[in-house]
Amino acid sequence: MSDEKMKLFTVGPAQMYQHTVDVRSRVVPYFRTPEFSELMLENVRLMKELVDAEESAEVMFLTASGSGAMEATVMNCFDEQDKLLVISGGTFGERFEKICEIHSIPFQALKLGPDETLTGEHFEKYEDQGFTGLLVNLHETYTGQLYDINLIHAFCERNHLYLVVDAISTFLCDEYHMKKYHIDATIVSSQKGLCLAPGLSMVVLSERMIRERVMNNHVKSLYFDFKDYLSNIKRGQTPFTPAVGVCFELNDMLKYIEKQGVDNRIREVKERCDYFRNKIAGLPIHLPSYPLSNAISPIRFEKDIAMEFFQYLKDEKHIMVNPVGGELGKCSIRVAHIGDLKLADYDILLAEIKHFFGM
Ligand SMILES: *Cc1c(COP(=O)(O)O)cnc(C)c1O
Image (cartoon, rainbow, N blue to C red; front, side, top):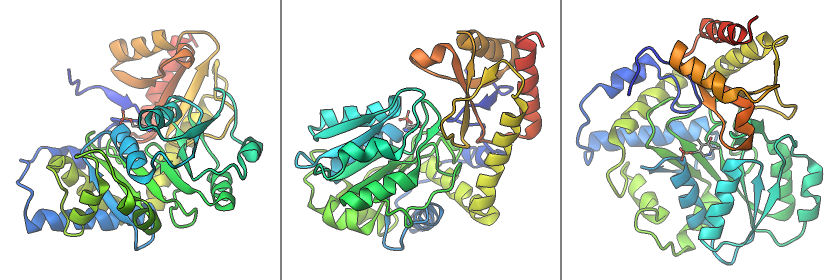
């Protein structure tokens, strides 16, 4: 059920840009061609630029949603001999835990409560405990907390860990620097900050992760063996049929952002975010106190009316906000600031919030 009038304040799929819709409307071509290879090599170059990776980094294009890329990354970079620390402050952190369990990779979870800020103290008991890698969803989209990359980076440096970052909902929303923080794997997905159709995920790997881990790992998977992706991408190809249409959308979007400048893109998201957050002051809603990403505002109501409000917006007003699963979902919804949204769109949403509260 597609609703052309529906306005998406959701984090993914997000409100698509018209230039993406135009690319989507074209016939999907055959892909084992020099022309498609060239497009993919341009995607590699631009992806590396946007995550601020070393020249020696490499990009994997997986036809999978973000969770597939999370699982593939863990499978290819670690094994039963490892000991991982998982920052687990919501459902996406729990997903990393589950992946480790399924693949018999030893791990400990640094658990955070729904209102708990990640601080340096949390790391103290994990120092010098023989960890080999750290997994983090830098923006835990469930709660909206943006973890402090400086803390995580410093812990990984002191303890000589590989750092794997699920950047799916922070990429293009907040600053991101792979080089500066020695990040060994960055996971990105098409439907979040890039505002494309779902189906394509990118994993950017550091040279040391490729050389020391991926090339020496025996992955029990046909589809998700990164060695195949690494050898194919050198010539701009993937081992299996990629989401060809989304690769075209990606190329269009990456070139658009390159022209705009990545800092300006992030500034645009932040501007919508700040505008909304400033305007909700005085309403019977509040934001949690931990650091937040610019991607979403996880608003909390004083009563358990989140689902009622969500239904009202969707059915009566053609406005889609992001519901929250689990316990938090009773009193919380998330409003995204990515996508092709204007400040005036937020005025409409704010007016509806006021109307709902009889203000
Ligand atoms: C959206 C998201 C994912 C991927 O979820 P899929 O449903 O598999 O696309 C992974 N991690 C984070 C932090 C996300 O926000």
